[in-house]
Image 1 (cartoon, helix red, strand yellow):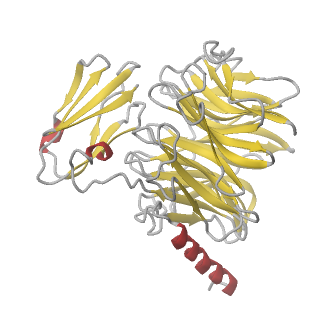
Image 2 (image 1 turned 180 degrees about the vertical axis):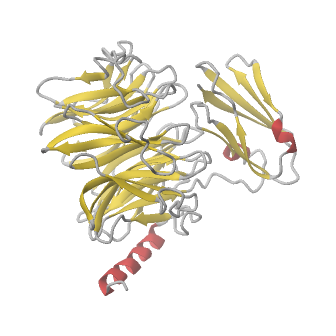
Length: 512
Protein backbone atom coordinates (compact mmCIF):
# COMPACT_ATOMS: atom_id res chain seq x y z
CA UNK A 1 0.00 0.00 0.00
CA UNK A 2 1.24 3.47 -0.83
CA UNK A 3 2.04 5.76 2.03
CA UNK A 4 -0.54 8.59 2.31
CA UNK A 5 1.96 11.30 1.35
CA UNK A 6 3.16 9.33 -1.66
CA UNK A 7 -0.41 8.74 -2.80
CA UNK A 8 -1.21 12.45 -2.45
CA UNK A 9 1.92 13.31 -4.42
CA UNK A 10 0.93 10.86 -7.15
CA UNK A 11 -2.52 12.45 -7.46
CA UNK A 12 -0.97 15.90 -7.59
CA UNK A 13 1.41 14.73 -10.28
CA UNK A 14 -1.47 13.48 -12.41
CA UNK A 15 -3.20 16.82 -11.99
CA UNK A 16 -0.12 18.66 -13.17
CA UNK A 17 0.24 16.37 -16.16
CA UNK A 18 -3.36 16.86 -17.29
CA UNK A 19 -3.18 20.62 -16.94
CA UNK A 20 0.20 20.96 -18.64
CA UNK A 21 -0.25 18.80 -21.73
CA UNK A 22 -1.23 21.80 -23.85
CA UNK A 23 -1.99 19.52 -26.84
CA UNK A 24 1.66 18.58 -27.30
CA UNK A 25 1.77 15.17 -25.56
CA UNK A 26 0.90 12.01 -27.49
CA UNK A 27 -1.97 10.30 -25.65
CA UNK A 28 -1.30 7.01 -27.47
CA UNK A 29 1.86 6.75 -25.34
CA UNK A 30 0.83 5.43 -21.91
CA UNK A 31 -2.50 7.33 -22.23
CA UNK A 32 -0.90 10.56 -20.95
CA UNK A 33 2.18 10.90 -23.16
CA UNK A 34 4.40 10.40 -20.09
CA UNK A 35 6.09 7.33 -18.58
CA UNK A 36 8.12 7.33 -15.36
CA UNK A 37 10.46 4.49 -14.37
CA UNK A 38 12.47 3.66 -11.26
CA UNK A 39 15.01 0.89 -10.75
CA UNK A 40 14.40 0.26 -7.07
CA UNK A 41 11.94 0.96 -4.25
CA UNK A 42 14.04 3.88 -3.00
CA UNK A 43 16.56 4.37 -5.80
CA UNK A 44 17.76 7.62 -7.32
CA UNK A 45 17.59 7.27 -11.12
CA UNK A 46 18.54 9.64 -13.91
CA UNK A 47 18.06 9.26 -17.66
CA UNK A 48 20.57 10.98 -19.91
CA UNK A 49 20.05 9.65 -23.44
CA UNK A 50 17.45 8.06 -25.71
CA UNK A 51 17.53 6.27 -29.08
CA UNK A 52 14.71 4.87 -31.23
CA UNK A 53 14.88 1.45 -32.88
CA UNK A 54 13.47 0.98 -36.42
CA UNK A 55 10.53 -0.90 -34.87
CA UNK A 56 9.62 2.16 -32.77
CA UNK A 57 10.92 0.89 -29.43
CA UNK A 58 12.71 3.45 -27.26
CA UNK A 59 16.03 2.67 -25.55
CA UNK A 60 16.96 4.89 -22.59
CA UNK A 61 20.33 5.04 -20.82
CA UNK A 62 21.29 6.61 -17.52
CA UNK A 63 22.33 5.71 -13.99
CA UNK A 64 20.78 4.34 -10.83
CA UNK A 65 21.86 4.48 -7.19
CA UNK A 66 20.40 3.43 -3.87
CA UNK A 67 17.73 1.01 -2.81
CA UNK A 68 19.27 -2.46 -3.06
CA UNK A 69 22.06 -1.13 -5.31
CA UNK A 70 25.29 -0.40 -3.45
CA UNK A 71 27.10 1.68 -6.10
CA UNK A 72 25.98 3.94 -8.90
CA UNK A 73 25.47 1.74 -11.98
CA UNK A 74 24.62 2.32 -15.60
CA UNK A 75 21.00 1.45 -16.34
CA UNK A 76 19.19 0.68 -19.58
CA UNK A 77 15.48 0.41 -20.21
CA UNK A 78 13.47 -0.31 -23.35
CA UNK A 79 9.88 0.67 -24.05
CA UNK A 80 7.32 -0.58 -26.54
CA UNK A 81 5.70 1.99 -28.85
CA UNK A 82 2.73 2.22 -26.44
CA UNK A 83 5.06 3.27 -23.58
CA UNK A 84 5.08 0.02 -21.63
CA UNK A 85 8.34 -1.63 -20.62
CA UNK A 86 9.47 -4.26 -23.13
CA UNK A 87 9.48 -7.69 -21.42
CA UNK A 88 11.73 -9.12 -24.17
CA UNK A 89 14.51 -6.86 -22.88
CA UNK A 90 16.18 -8.47 -19.85
CA UNK A 91 12.87 -10.00 -18.74
CA UNK A 92 11.26 -6.83 -17.37
CA UNK A 93 12.44 -4.07 -19.73
CA UNK A 94 15.30 -2.95 -17.45
CA UNK A 95 18.91 -3.88 -16.78
CA UNK A 96 21.86 -2.48 -14.84
CA UNK A 97 25.62 -3.00 -14.95
CA UNK A 98 28.41 -2.01 -12.59
CA UNK A 99 31.70 -0.94 -14.20
CA UNK A 100 34.61 -0.21 -11.88
CA UNK A 101 33.67 1.01 -8.42
CA UNK A 102 30.80 3.13 -9.81
CA UNK A 103 29.70 4.31 -13.25
CA UNK A 104 27.23 6.41 -15.22
CA UNK A 105 25.86 6.11 -18.78
CA UNK A 106 25.55 9.45 -20.54
CA UNK A 107 24.92 8.47 -24.16
CA UNK A 108 23.42 5.62 -26.20
CA UNK A 109 23.50 4.63 -29.89
CA UNK A 110 22.09 1.72 -31.88
CA UNK A 111 23.89 -0.52 -34.34
CA UNK A 112 22.09 -1.71 -37.51
CA UNK A 113 22.11 -5.27 -36.09
CA UNK A 114 20.11 -4.14 -33.05
CA UNK A 115 22.97 -4.11 -30.59
CA UNK A 116 23.06 -1.19 -28.14
CA UNK A 117 26.19 0.84 -27.38
CA UNK A 118 26.34 3.06 -24.30
CA UNK A 119 29.19 5.23 -23.07
CA UNK A 120 30.00 7.28 -20.04
CA UNK A 121 32.54 7.11 -17.24
CA UNK A 122 33.53 4.82 -14.39
CA UNK A 123 35.61 5.42 -11.27
CA UNK A 124 38.60 3.64 -9.73
CA UNK A 125 40.22 5.12 -6.60
CA UNK A 126 38.38 8.44 -7.15
CA UNK A 127 39.70 8.80 -10.72
CA UNK A 128 37.21 9.03 -13.61
CA UNK A 129 37.79 7.01 -16.79
CA UNK A 130 35.71 6.68 -19.99
CA UNK A 131 34.17 3.43 -21.17
CA UNK A 132 31.97 2.01 -23.92
CA UNK A 133 29.72 -1.00 -23.35
CA UNK A 134 27.72 -3.03 -25.85
CA UNK A 135 24.55 -4.99 -25.19
CA UNK A 136 22.72 -7.57 -27.25
CA UNK A 137 19.15 -6.74 -28.38
CA UNK A 138 17.83 -8.80 -25.45
CA UNK A 139 19.70 -6.64 -22.90
CA UNK A 140 22.54 -9.05 -22.13
CA UNK A 141 26.15 -7.78 -22.31
CA UNK A 142 27.80 -8.56 -25.67
CA UNK A 143 30.86 -10.61 -24.74
CA UNK A 144 32.35 -10.17 -28.24
CA UNK A 145 33.03 -6.53 -27.32
CA UNK A 146 35.92 -5.52 -25.06
CA UNK A 147 36.07 -7.63 -21.91
CA UNK A 148 32.69 -9.12 -21.02
CA UNK A 149 30.96 -6.47 -23.11
CA UNK A 150 32.88 -3.44 -21.80
CA UNK A 151 35.81 -1.49 -23.25
CA UNK A 152 37.40 0.32 -20.30
CA UNK A 153 39.77 3.11 -21.31
CA UNK A 154 42.74 3.70 -19.05
CA UNK A 155 43.26 7.49 -19.24
CA UNK A 156 41.33 9.97 -17.07
CA UNK A 157 38.42 11.40 -19.08
CA UNK A 158 34.64 11.65 -19.44
CA UNK A 159 32.67 10.32 -22.45
CA UNK A 160 29.60 12.43 -23.18
CA UNK A 161 28.50 11.43 -26.71
CA UNK A 162 28.71 8.38 -28.99
CA UNK A 163 28.00 7.68 -32.67
CA UNK A 164 28.34 4.49 -34.71
CA UNK A 165 30.12 4.82 -38.05
CA UNK A 166 28.88 2.95 -41.12
CA UNK A 167 31.91 0.64 -40.86
CA UNK A 168 30.97 -0.31 -37.29
CA UNK A 169 33.63 1.79 -35.57
CA UNK A 170 32.52 3.60 -32.43
CA UNK A 171 33.34 7.27 -31.92
CA UNK A 172 33.25 8.87 -28.49
CA UNK A 173 33.30 12.57 -27.67
CA UNK A 174 34.01 14.15 -24.30
CA UNK A 175 36.83 15.79 -22.38
CA UNK A 176 40.03 14.99 -20.53
CA UNK A 177 42.18 17.19 -18.27
CA UNK A 178 40.70 20.44 -19.59
CA UNK A 179 40.90 19.37 -23.25
CA UNK A 180 38.21 18.41 -25.74
CA UNK A 181 38.53 14.73 -26.61
CA UNK A 182 37.61 12.33 -29.42
CA UNK A 183 38.25 8.61 -29.15
CA UNK A 184 37.56 5.94 -31.78
CA UNK A 185 37.21 2.23 -31.14
CA UNK A 186 37.07 -0.69 -33.52
CA UNK A 187 33.90 -2.76 -33.55
CA UNK A 188 35.67 -5.15 -31.16
CA UNK A 189 36.23 -2.42 -28.57
CA UNK A 190 39.95 -2.09 -29.24
CA UNK A 191 41.46 1.35 -29.92
CA UNK A 192 41.53 2.37 -33.59
CA UNK A 193 45.22 3.14 -34.18
CA UNK A 194 44.38 4.74 -37.53
CA UNK A 195 42.59 7.60 -35.76
CA UNK A 196 44.60 10.46 -34.25
CA UNK A 197 47.29 9.24 -31.89
CA UNK A 198 46.54 5.58 -31.10
CA UNK A 199 42.81 6.26 -31.31
CA UNK A 200 42.79 9.59 -29.44
CA UNK A 201 42.42 13.23 -30.51
CA UNK A 202 42.69 16.17 -28.12
CA UNK A 203 41.59 19.72 -29.01
CA UNK A 204 42.77 22.49 -26.71
CA UNK A 205 41.77 26.17 -26.81
CA UNK A 206 44.44 27.15 -24.25
CA UNK A 207 46.03 25.91 -21.05
CA UNK A 208 44.01 28.43 -19.02
CA UNK A 209 40.69 27.09 -20.33
CA UNK A 210 38.47 24.11 -19.47
CA UNK A 211 37.45 22.68 -22.86
CA UNK A 212 34.70 20.08 -23.36
CA UNK A 213 32.92 18.33 -26.22
CA UNK A 214 29.30 17.59 -25.31
CA UNK A 215 27.97 16.37 -28.68
CA UNK A 216 29.31 14.79 -31.86
CA UNK A 217 27.77 13.92 -35.24
CA UNK A 218 28.96 12.45 -38.52
CA UNK A 219 28.65 13.95 -41.97
CA UNK A 220 27.94 11.59 -44.90
CA UNK A 221 31.55 12.07 -46.08
CA UNK A 222 32.85 10.76 -42.75
CA UNK A 223 33.90 14.11 -41.31
CA UNK A 224 33.23 14.57 -37.60
CA UNK A 225 31.41 17.61 -36.21
CA UNK A 226 31.72 18.25 -32.47
CA UNK A 227 30.17 20.91 -30.26
CA UNK A 228 30.97 22.05 -26.76
CA UNK A 229 32.46 24.89 -24.77
CA UNK A 230 35.73 26.51 -23.76
CA UNK A 231 35.56 28.03 -20.28
CA UNK A 232 37.60 30.34 -18.07
CA UNK A 233 35.86 30.27 -14.70
CA UNK A 234 33.95 32.37 -13.88
CA UNK A 235 34.47 35.07 -16.49
CA UNK A 236 33.86 33.56 -19.93
CA UNK A 237 32.67 30.51 -21.83
CA UNK A 238 32.73 30.21 -25.62
CA UNK A 239 30.31 28.00 -27.53
CA UNK A 240 32.56 26.00 -29.88
CA UNK A 241 31.89 23.90 -33.00
CA UNK A 242 34.81 22.02 -34.54
CA UNK A 243 35.13 19.72 -37.54
CA UNK A 244 37.63 16.93 -38.09
CA UNK A 245 38.71 14.78 -41.00
CA UNK A 246 37.85 11.06 -40.79
CA UNK A 247 41.41 10.37 -39.55
CA UNK A 248 41.00 12.81 -36.65
CA UNK A 249 42.98 15.75 -37.99
CA UNK A 250 41.31 19.21 -37.85
CA UNK A 251 39.42 20.21 -41.00
CA UNK A 252 41.15 23.50 -41.78
CA UNK A 253 38.46 24.34 -44.34
CA UNK A 254 35.94 24.79 -41.54
CA UNK A 255 35.76 28.10 -39.68
CA UNK A 256 39.21 29.27 -38.60
CA UNK A 257 41.64 26.40 -38.53
CA UNK A 258 38.90 23.82 -37.99
CA UNK A 259 36.63 25.50 -35.42
CA UNK A 260 34.11 28.31 -35.08
CA UNK A 261 32.32 30.15 -32.25
CA UNK A 262 28.91 31.69 -31.67
CA UNK A 263 30.47 34.77 -30.06
CA UNK A 264 32.92 35.67 -27.29
CA UNK A 265 31.07 38.34 -25.31
CA UNK A 266 29.01 36.15 -23.01
CA UNK A 267 29.01 32.84 -21.13
CA UNK A 268 27.76 30.20 -23.57
CA UNK A 269 27.53 26.42 -23.70
CA UNK A 270 26.62 23.99 -26.48
CA UNK A 271 24.84 20.81 -25.36
CA UNK A 272 23.77 19.18 -28.64
CA UNK A 273 23.87 19.60 -32.43
CA UNK A 274 22.28 18.23 -35.59
CA UNK A 275 23.30 18.34 -39.28
CA UNK A 276 20.78 18.75 -42.11
CA UNK A 277 20.97 17.39 -45.66
CA UNK A 278 22.74 20.57 -46.87
CA UNK A 279 25.48 20.24 -44.27
CA UNK A 280 24.20 23.11 -42.10
CA UNK A 281 24.86 22.61 -38.38
CA UNK A 282 22.24 23.66 -35.83
CA UNK A 283 23.28 23.72 -32.18
CA UNK A 284 21.46 24.12 -28.88
CA UNK A 285 22.73 25.25 -25.53
CA UNK A 286 22.45 28.10 -23.05
CA UNK A 287 23.76 31.63 -22.70
CA UNK A 288 24.15 33.77 -19.57
CA UNK A 289 23.45 37.46 -20.00
CA UNK A 290 23.24 39.71 -16.95
CA UNK A 291 22.91 36.71 -14.60
CA UNK A 292 19.96 35.29 -16.57
CA UNK A 293 20.18 32.08 -18.57
CA UNK A 294 18.44 31.82 -21.95
CA UNK A 295 18.18 28.97 -24.40
CA UNK A 296 20.57 29.39 -27.33
CA UNK A 297 19.86 27.95 -30.79
CA UNK A 298 22.30 28.81 -33.58
CA UNK A 299 22.88 27.63 -37.13
CA UNK A 300 26.18 27.47 -38.98
CA UNK A 301 26.57 26.99 -42.71
CA UNK A 302 28.61 24.02 -43.89
CA UNK A 303 31.75 26.16 -44.02
CA UNK A 304 31.48 27.31 -40.41
CA UNK A 305 29.93 30.78 -40.77
CA UNK A 306 26.74 31.68 -38.92
CA UNK A 307 23.66 31.50 -41.18
CA UNK A 308 22.44 35.11 -41.31
CA UNK A 309 19.04 33.93 -42.60
CA UNK A 310 18.37 32.04 -39.40
CA UNK A 311 16.96 33.89 -36.39
CA UNK A 312 18.84 37.10 -35.64
CA UNK A 313 21.99 36.80 -37.78
CA UNK A 314 22.22 33.10 -37.08
CA UNK A 315 21.15 33.04 -33.41
CA UNK A 316 17.85 32.48 -31.60
CA UNK A 317 17.58 33.27 -27.87
CA UNK A 318 14.53 32.32 -25.80
CA UNK A 319 13.75 32.77 -22.12
CA UNK A 320 10.35 31.41 -21.08
CA UNK A 321 10.56 32.28 -17.36
CA UNK A 322 13.32 33.28 -14.94
CA UNK A 323 15.82 31.13 -16.87
CA UNK A 324 15.60 28.62 -19.74
CA UNK A 325 18.12 25.90 -20.57
CA UNK A 326 18.41 24.07 -23.90
CA UNK A 327 19.64 20.46 -23.72
CA UNK A 328 18.85 18.57 -26.95
CA UNK A 329 17.79 19.26 -30.54
CA UNK A 330 16.28 17.40 -33.50
CA UNK A 331 15.10 18.09 -37.05
CA UNK A 332 11.76 17.19 -38.57
CA UNK A 333 11.43 16.16 -42.23
CA UNK A 334 10.52 19.67 -43.42
CA UNK A 335 13.32 21.45 -41.56
CA UNK A 336 11.37 22.42 -38.45
CA UNK A 337 13.42 22.24 -35.26
CA UNK A 338 12.41 20.60 -31.98
CA UNK A 339 14.25 21.19 -28.72
CA UNK A 340 13.92 20.15 -25.09
CA UNK A 341 15.38 21.28 -21.80
CA UNK A 342 14.17 22.95 -18.63
CA UNK A 343 12.68 26.21 -17.36
CA UNK A 344 13.69 27.61 -13.98
CA UNK A 345 10.71 29.11 -12.15
CA UNK A 346 12.24 30.44 -8.95
CA UNK A 347 12.07 27.41 -6.66
CA UNK A 348 11.73 24.58 -9.18
CA UNK A 349 12.46 23.48 -12.74
CA UNK A 350 9.78 22.41 -15.22
CA UNK A 351 10.25 20.29 -18.31
CA UNK A 352 10.47 22.36 -21.50
CA UNK A 353 9.84 21.52 -25.16
CA UNK A 354 9.70 23.94 -28.09
CA UNK A 355 9.44 23.89 -31.85
CA UNK A 356 10.77 26.38 -34.39
CA UNK A 357 10.19 26.94 -38.08
CA UNK A 358 13.18 26.33 -40.40
CA UNK A 359 14.08 30.04 -40.28
CA UNK A 360 14.23 30.07 -36.47
CA UNK A 361 10.82 31.66 -35.84
CA UNK A 362 8.57 30.18 -33.15
CA UNK A 363 6.23 27.53 -34.58
CA UNK A 364 2.68 28.62 -33.61
CA UNK A 365 1.38 25.09 -34.32
CA UNK A 366 3.12 23.69 -31.24
CA UNK A 367 1.94 24.27 -27.68
CA UNK A 368 1.64 27.89 -26.57
CA UNK A 369 3.16 29.95 -29.40
CA UNK A 370 5.80 27.31 -30.04
CA UNK A 371 6.62 26.23 -26.49
CA UNK A 372 5.33 23.96 -23.76
CA UNK A 373 6.22 23.71 -20.06
CA UNK A 374 5.25 20.54 -18.24
CA UNK A 375 5.54 19.43 -14.62
CA UNK A 376 5.18 16.30 -12.51
CA UNK A 377 4.74 18.41 -9.41
CA UNK A 378 8.34 17.75 -8.41
CA UNK A 379 11.14 20.25 -7.93
CA UNK A 380 13.82 19.51 -10.50
CA UNK A 381 12.34 18.40 -13.81
CA UNK A 382 14.57 18.36 -16.89
CA UNK A 383 14.55 16.75 -20.36
CA UNK A 384 18.08 15.95 -21.51
CA UNK A 385 17.77 14.16 -24.85
CA UNK A 386 15.33 13.60 -27.70
CA UNK A 387 14.91 11.37 -30.74
CA UNK A 388 12.65 12.04 -33.74
CA UNK A 389 10.30 9.35 -35.06
CA UNK A 390 9.66 8.82 -38.81
CA UNK A 391 6.25 10.53 -38.54
CA UNK A 392 7.75 13.65 -36.87
CA UNK A 393 6.59 12.83 -33.37
CA UNK A 394 9.54 12.93 -30.99
CA UNK A 395 10.41 11.15 -27.78
CA UNK A 396 12.40 12.76 -24.98
CA UNK A 397 14.08 11.41 -21.85
CA UNK A 398 15.07 13.11 -18.61
CA UNK A 399 14.44 12.86 -14.90
CA UNK A 400 12.59 14.37 -11.99
CA UNK A 401 13.72 15.16 -8.43
CA UNK A 402 13.40 14.87 -5.45
CA UNK A 403 11.62 12.14 -3.46
CA UNK A 404 12.50 8.83 -5.10
CA UNK A 405 13.96 10.20 -8.30
CA UNK A 406 13.11 8.53 -11.59
CA UNK A 407 13.43 8.49 -15.33
CA UNK A 408 10.78 10.29 -17.33
CA UNK A 409 10.02 9.62 -21.01
CA UNK A 410 7.65 11.86 -22.94
CA UNK A 411 6.32 11.49 -26.47
CA UNK A 412 5.25 14.63 -28.28
CA UNK A 413 2.83 14.90 -31.18
CA UNK A 414 3.11 16.78 -34.42
CA UNK A 415 -0.34 18.29 -34.94
CA UNK A 416 0.56 19.02 -38.57
CA UNK A 417 0.39 15.27 -39.31
CA UNK A 418 -2.93 13.83 -40.51
CA UNK A 419 -2.95 10.30 -41.87
CA UNK A 420 -6.66 9.41 -42.13
CA UNK A 421 -6.88 10.71 -45.71
CA UNK A 422 -4.25 11.05 -48.36
CA UNK A 423 -4.57 14.25 -50.34
CA UNK A 424 -2.30 17.09 -51.40
CA UNK A 425 -2.30 18.65 -47.93
CA UNK A 426 -1.60 15.42 -46.09
CA UNK A 427 0.98 13.80 -48.33
CA UNK A 428 3.98 15.78 -47.00
CA UNK A 429 3.21 14.63 -43.47
CA UNK A 430 2.40 10.99 -44.13
CA UNK A 431 5.51 9.80 -45.97
CA UNK A 432 8.75 9.55 -43.95
CA UNK A 433 12.20 8.11 -44.61
CA UNK A 434 14.06 6.90 -41.54
CA UNK A 435 16.98 6.94 -40.89
CA UNK A 436 18.04 9.84 -43.13
CA UNK A 437 21.03 10.19 -43.85
CA UNK A 438 20.54 6.81 -45.50
CA UNK A 439 21.80 3.67 -43.81
CA UNK A 440 21.48 -0.04 -44.50
CA UNK A 441 18.17 -0.20 -42.63
CA UNK A 442 16.61 2.98 -44.08
CA UNK A 443 12.98 2.58 -45.13
CA UNK A 444 10.01 4.58 -46.35
CA UNK A 445 7.19 4.61 -43.78
CA UNK A 446 3.70 5.60 -44.90
CA UNK A 447 0.00 4.90 -44.69
CA UNK A 448 -1.88 3.35 -47.63
CA UNK A 449 -5.54 4.37 -47.18
CA UNK A 450 -8.32 2.16 -48.46
CA UNK A 451 -9.72 2.93 -51.89
CA UNK A 452 -6.94 5.25 -53.03
CA UNK A 453 -4.53 4.69 -55.87
CA UNK A 454 -1.30 2.79 -55.17
CA UNK A 455 1.65 5.21 -55.16
CA UNK A 456 4.41 5.17 -57.77
CA UNK A 457 7.74 5.41 -55.95
CA UNK A 458 11.21 5.82 -57.44
CA UNK A 459 14.68 6.85 -56.30
CA UNK A 460 16.72 9.33 -58.34
CA UNK A 461 20.16 10.87 -58.02
CA UNK A 462 20.88 14.61 -57.93
CA UNK A 463 20.77 14.83 -61.73
CA UNK A 464 17.30 13.25 -61.91
CA UNK A 465 18.49 9.85 -63.19
CA UNK A 466 16.18 7.08 -61.98
CA UNK A 467 18.15 4.54 -59.95
CA UNK A 468 15.36 2.33 -58.60
CA UNK A 469 11.64 1.83 -59.01
CA UNK A 470 9.82 0.20 -56.12
CA UNK A 471 7.08 -2.04 -57.48
CA UNK A 472 6.61 -4.32 -54.48
CA UNK A 473 3.98 -2.00 -53.01
CA UNK A 474 1.48 -2.68 -55.82
CA UNK A 475 -0.07 -5.71 -54.08
CA UNK A 476 0.20 -4.40 -50.52
CA UNK A 477 -2.77 -4.29 -48.17
CA UNK A 478 -4.07 -0.96 -46.92
CA UNK A 479 -2.68 0.47 -43.69
CA UNK A 480 0.84 1.18 -42.48
CA UNK A 481 3.58 0.30 -44.98
CA UNK A 482 7.32 -0.10 -44.56
CA UNK A 483 9.31 -0.09 -47.79
CA UNK A 484 13.06 -0.92 -47.44
CA UNK A 485 15.06 1.42 -49.69
CA UNK A 486 18.07 -0.90 -50.13
CA UNK A 487 20.45 2.04 -49.86
CA UNK A 488 23.51 0.31 -48.41
CA UNK A 489 25.49 0.28 -51.67
CA UNK A 490 24.77 3.84 -52.76
CA UNK A 491 27.76 6.19 -52.91
CA UNK A 492 27.76 9.32 -50.76
CA UNK A 493 25.71 12.16 -52.21
CA UNK A 494 22.27 13.76 -52.61
CA UNK A 495 19.25 11.68 -53.67
CA UNK A 496 15.51 12.17 -54.07
CA UNK A 497 12.61 9.82 -53.46
CA UNK A 498 9.60 10.76 -55.60
CA UNK A 499 6.11 9.63 -54.65
CA UNK A 500 3.19 10.05 -57.06
CA UNK A 501 -0.43 9.16 -56.32
CA UNK A 502 -2.85 10.32 -58.97
CA UNK A 503 -2.41 14.07 -59.29
CA UNK A 504 -0.49 14.35 -56.01
CA UNK A 505 3.30 14.47 -56.26
CA UNK A 506 5.84 14.65 -53.45
CA UNK A 507 9.66 14.66 -53.52
CA UNK A 508 11.62 13.73 -50.39
CA UNK A 509 15.27 14.88 -50.27
CA UNK A 510 17.71 12.23 -49.03
CA UNK A 511 21.41 12.13 -48.35
CA UNK A 512 23.85 9.25 -48.13
